[in-house]
Amino acid sequence: MSLKEKVDRTKLPKHVAIIMDGNGRWAKKKGNQRIFGHKNGVKAVREAVEGAGEIGVEYLTLYAFSTENWNRPKQEVDALMSLLVSTLNSESGTLMENNVRLRSIGDIAGLPKNVQQNLSEIIKKTEKNTGLTLILALNYSARWEIINAVQNIVAEAKQGDIELDQINNDYFEKHLNTCGFPDPDLLIRTSGEFRISNFLIWQIAYTELYFTEVLWPDFNRDELYKAIIDYQKRERRFGKTSDQIINS
Ligand code: IPE
Ligand code: IPE
Ligand code: MG
Image 1 (cartoon, rainbow, N blue to C red):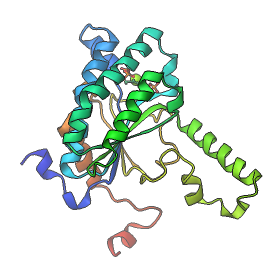
Image 2 (tube, helix red, strand yellow):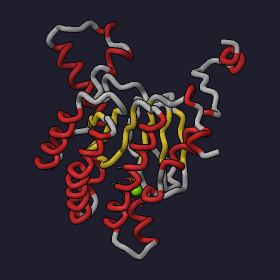
Image 3 (cartoon, protein in one colour):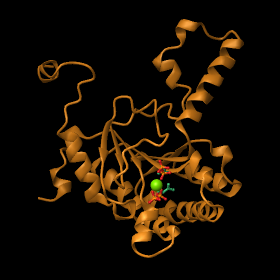
Image 4 (spheres, rainbow, N blue to C red):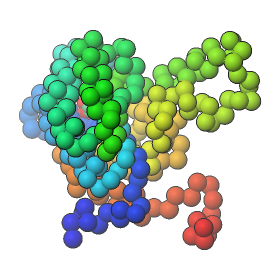
């Protein structure tokens, strides 16, 4: 029985998020430059997108570039930006064929103009697709997202549009970049690092976490299915007791 067949289709995570990490170390192990690792990471992105779409995951969020990643050497940042543009261009046909709807989160206005342009073109082109929603986190920082939400809420309050007691979970979430997307059920991080690195802090309050030693360029459908099978063995209690969950 293949791993794909072992996935229980009645208990799928609706939303899977991935911190794609380990490209640099993968390249170094092979005696290559870090950018070689990023280039090979594109294959793994394709695997994750197709693998998720094939089993019926509805949302896949990929952490592709954090706001902190601007602190890398300029040469690497430039290479990552041009890889992003070339990948968006080369994959747009496949996204259409696979009925994938592309979206983004993060401070998009802070990205180079050509990246912004490419991204918005493909988001527009794929907007009517009804399969997997692929959300790219670009120039993303969870703290930035939260501060941005607070600024917008305070601006509304100053205009007299809201009362204090209207500010609840639902209201706050409407001001996040992820507005309209469900919270991730499963968060995967590759490369053996056990941290969140400023990703989706608000949204992962009750997300199941899965860490793997696999370096991102080696990630594939089977690695995704392994994570989902592991997720399916867990009991999500949301504060309740196990008995309450079993008897509900
Ligand atoms: C993840 O791989 C890709 C990005 C952050 C853009 P890294 O480039 O962080 O690879 P390591 O962690 O240095 O191995
Ligand atoms: C997190 O990976 C960001 C992305 C995967 C885009 P990093 O490699 O930048 O994370 P840290 O700096 O090791 O925490
Ligand atoms: Mg890293």
